[in-house]
Image 1: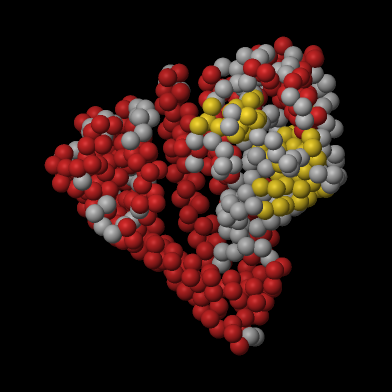
Image 2: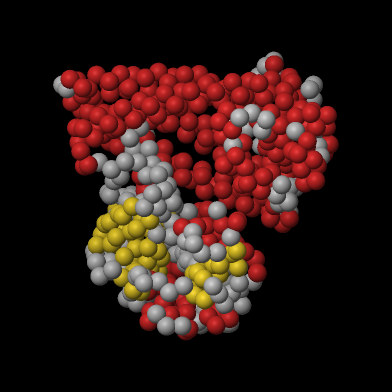
Length: 548
């Protein structure tokens, strides 16, 4: 979204003259501007403040989705119009004292997607098929990239972003599947569906909804039959290399663009053309050595899943081992050349075919089956969506507005008290403090993911270590809520959502408040850092008093 806008990643001298943030830190936090896409009328958005990664993501993967936490995961932007800061008629007053234990909090945000209305057969498929497959693959790739990255610092730098994404997703899947393995949680899903079906059976208009449940079960079985090959060939699991994705796009774009817009695969529609071309012609670095490693592993996985005698395996490997074939394909393709990609894209099918690029030819060898698998999957998904619409209508007729629909990135308001919980027999308090941050770092030798930035070590004595840092509430959140404000009864900003704990990942399939918690950075903790670590009184004054 914001790629089309002017995002000025600069530090305003008025506020941050003393912070000395490096340019790579500023670049890192440009991603935070993603949430500002809702300011559709504004084109000038400037970064005002961003902490170092070492404290913003303190604890790294080991502490991700865990609690207690110690993260200053915040950044501030200023929105401009006609060269002047926008003056909003509506804003939240900043709470200097922060969140208080037991008080009610409200969270306004745009939660992404939830699957709380799925049927039992759909949930069983996720539990027994989809998630176990995904977890095994994620852990395989995590080991691969970790080992490759540990060989030298440059390898680690190149693999860093992809490895982080894999680790984050792996942990999210671990948390979500735990809920589906919980007999109490899953048993409640089974019981609720059985009760609903019983009510439908008692109604004259319930026949269509009961039939819709059966259609979903049949569609789910159809998906299960093709799942392995669909993931490998159409889902690109067997071809884990950015170059291959570009090669398939060039192949398919040549075939799809001459078709009427409504008959094309959706990614080649006119509506997506601008963003598609930006992606296709991006000059983002593609590292040959890393691509050989990832493609060799994924081709090995292809052989493991389908067997050496499979026709697709034979066509892809062309008589070579997965490692040798990966090296051959990556070193001989011209796909990494942006000018080459533009030439093929503009020339269309004939030009693509004449190029005889090895990666494109591999994509061509599997494309017919891949498209057929996609069509089967999309047909089954369409059947399920239509059936869910019928069930949803029946549910509304029975239950009215008592149940809200699944999240779809639309604006929602959630609420819940600031409250700790019990885990493994231990009472987890609602708040963490700055004292806990330094204790956690010291216990880990102040190394790796627990290494604090130098300024934080130097300024420790200046901090009030009893200041609240992070806190948890029972607010119902899910992915997409990051950056949502936590607000008290007085309408004051008391913190900002940055994560959930591991138990909260069950929120994909249902809400519970026994252990699931939303994590926020406390407004009082933010001010303490700005005053005493970063020494930016002008920014503090603006936040608290509304004056620059």
